[in-house]
Amino acid sequence: MTGPARLTVLAGPTAVGKGTVSADIRQRYPSVWFSLSATTRPARPGEVDGVHYMFVSPERFDAMVADGEMLEWALVHGQHRYGTPRGPVDAQLARGVPVLLEIELQGARQVREKMPDARLVFLAPPSWDELVSRLVGRGTEDAAERERRLATARVEMAAEREFDHVVVNDDVRRATDEIVALMGVPVGPADGQAHAG
Ligand code: 5GP
Image 1: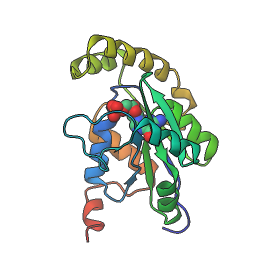
Image 2: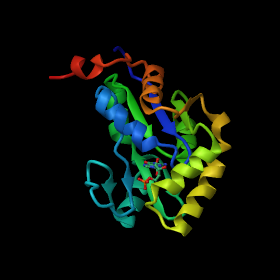
Image 3: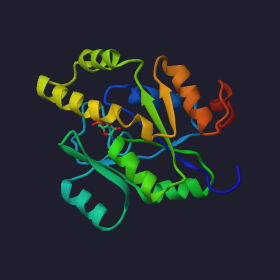
Image 4: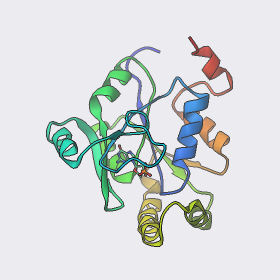
């Protein structure tokens, strides 16, 4: 690839399955580089610092924002802050590597402001009822947290029209292939092999 690559942002409502789609992209399309977000949220069981997130203190997060290190950042569900360190993103793009940010809506809007060239992809549920059942079915949050997330999801669903592309998450592999095709990455089982070694 010649010249800088375009940044792609994948956003969508809570529980739409961004995490599952991201995991599928990582596994089947290793040529896509995922930004590592910083967060003030404590690690969940099984999460590893430097792999899933950079888990930082609120003070460290403040310093990163003050130093202009964040491409975007947001307070999510009114609780914890999450942000994208800009340096590594710029470096990968300059090398022509396709970069994907898996972030929420407020962050997607900031990326649009700062990098008008960025491609914004909205991952949508097949229906609102399907989204609610996925949110409840996950069972990892208590009732109050679920309500908070539903409220956030309602606002996020209304933002669909701000995005360049809408991909419906009816089937993970299909949705993944549609996203990487938008990124200009060749679709198919050969990607991992082509970049091995
Ligand atoms: P979780 O706590 O479940 O890992 O993530 C909560 C939400 O934060 C998800 O919607 C996720 O997309 C979003 N998120 C993760 N990293 C970032 C980031 O760097 N910036 C923004 N704006 N949102 C993020």
